[in-house]
Amino acid sequence: MSSRISARISAISESATLAVDAKAKAMKAAGRPVIGFGAGEPDFPTPGYIVEAAVEAAREPRFHKYTPAGGLPELRQAIADKTLRDSGYRVDASRVLVTNGGKQAVYQAFATLLDPGDEVLVVAPYWTTYPEAIKLAGGVQVDVVTDETTGYLVSVEQLEAARTERTKVLLFVSPSNPTGAVHPREQVEAIGRWAAEHGLWVVTDEIYEHLVYGDAEFTSIATAVPELGDRVVILNGVAKTYAMTGWRVGWLIGPSDVVKAATNLQSHATSNVSNVAQVAALAAVKGDLSAVERMREAFDRRRKTMVRMLNEIPGVLCPEPQGAFYVYPSVKALLGKELRGRRPQTSAELAELILEEAEVAVVPGEAFGTPGYFRLSYALGDDDLVEGVSRLQKLLSEAV
Ligand SMILES: Cc1ncc(COP(=O)(O)O)c(C=O)c1O
Image (cartoon, rainbow, N blue to C red; front, side, top):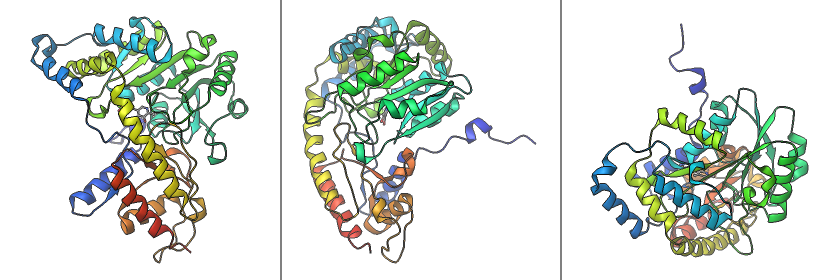
């Protein structure tokens, strides 16, 4: 008898980050004072001028109809202009595909590039969606593991050691989710030149481009290494920069053949992204960056507080991230210790104990391919942040 669910789809795991978030929200709804460090979204509302543009669009009959599957022409042009402004990367609007959030861009990029057995180099810790998108496309993920000793930066030597005859794509994400690592320009150039030299494709996820702190600078690998030519695909979206996670607008920029093929796929899967959301995204990318600047200042302050407080806990080692809105401390030294009558052996077990005992939600490193760590988002209010980390300090200092 054939199974009810296909092998391809049963192999997909639940998003661990959304699962933690859902559990924390359910506990909260049941009246427990849970503080959630799980969410990957800014705690700010979408700026008013963006919301107003959407309200006006909803009243316009032409936006009540189907529009081109690849995106509203004016939005594709505005994304091309914004890419030149922010990344120095010149691209024609015809090479922009507007997608339902960055997530659909991730799926379509791998679906378009990979044949069964093609290998993708993925720097671990990695964001939870990549493995599923690669697997669904029949690709084979090859992990290149980084750790806290290098601030989660990857080197050309590590990548070269993982390259085989079957390697087709390097996935490059800087600033990174979950580590917040930002690769310095020289390293981005070296990695890009290495990829170009070996004829690899580079898929680069630039969704956190505007969230960098201190001396760190975002470098677009596509611009820094022109030798990549027509083998580079950029993924991006409005979610993180403009606090627009719920609006679901992202994009993929690539060579004409890739964009055309991915648009064909999208035309059957979802057609155009909601016109109202596209008009909101148009207002966002055409506008200035003052809203993200205000969020960035708040995130920077919270980042410093969080790193300081986490490093005060014996057994927790937290490198200072330079981008995005996550910290990724090692908790390896706490595993196997006794805590409230239990002895958690893995970061997943420790995270569960913390949720039950301290009512604090963190995402264990198992979700990102590196057990022994936690990911904590600092995209939450300052008071909650301090309260949540204080609870962690209190609980974890009991470990013996
Ligand atoms: C690295 C990275 N890329 C892409 C996305 C996709 O964002 P969205 O689908 O909300 O646009 C996320 C969201 O968490 C992310 O962290």
